[in-house]
Length: 126
Image (tube, rainbow, N blue to C red; front, side, top):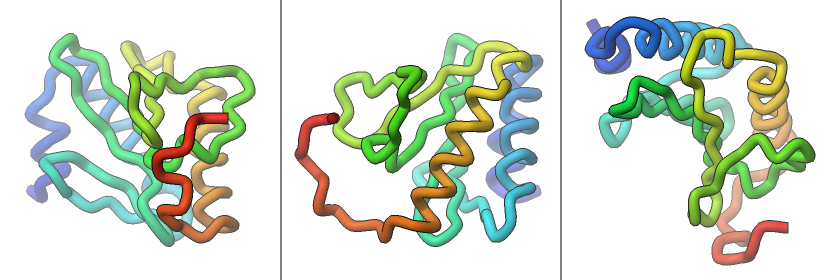
């Protein structure tokens, strides 16, 4: 069992199911790979796209590493005083919905079309 599978299967109940479903969803996109870094599953294509975090309360954060670049017109992402990472909290399987799919697709589009640079570090969110 690799580290990511171990991370997922160390969780219980619906949290495990959310982690597993999002993990499989992310890997279903062409050229997306998972890497275990900082004791967390990260997902990459050209650069880092997102990571999953199992919370102590049983929810899962799907965090986008380049969220500062998202349009996020519906304000689905929570930045929690972070400069570039925005998250959406998934508490039940039904939270993996169209909004989540659109966020993943936006992250992949940015990864495909906007070269990753650190030039926007420290700038305020639009």
